[in-house]
Length: 183
Image (cartoon, rainbow, N blue to C red; front, side):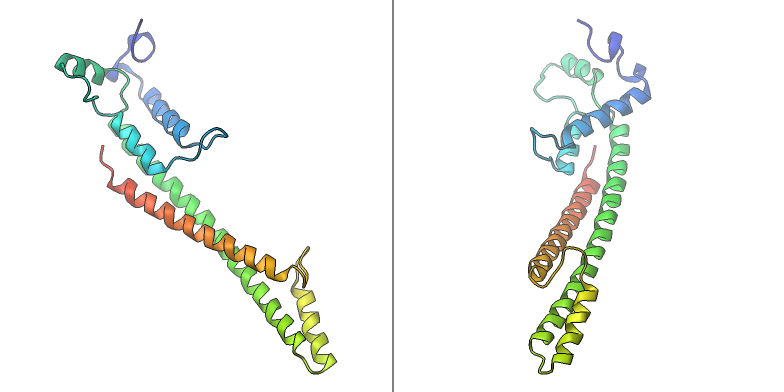
């Protein structure tokens, strides 16, 4: 049985591109959410990859350690570059989520204005004033929204906004952990 890259090639003889693909493939296999697994934290995945760059301490004999190091271990240089790519990708993901949070904030403000109009219409003494607020509500409603589902939709937008803000916080925390990792 031949060990290592195809045909027994080891360490420096393995093409740099193949090393990059191996690290990227291993990273993707670990972090990609599949129907049969749950999502793994990015920093935990990188920690696992770091472990795979170092000789396995279970091997006691020096010659076994040296041999293990030569066979198929992840390149520390490539792993460091992966860290940068992961951080950039995470920042891009945060940017997209922030754009969505901004959209949600606009929707919440719009719905709160409608809710305010609804309350003013309910407490209006004159029919003309009540109709003024009801017309304002009608103009601000979007498709599928009405007086009956207004508060539920507002609640759902607020929950979605809170969830996305928490997601942003978790992603920034992941970046902090990744920046502290050492290969």
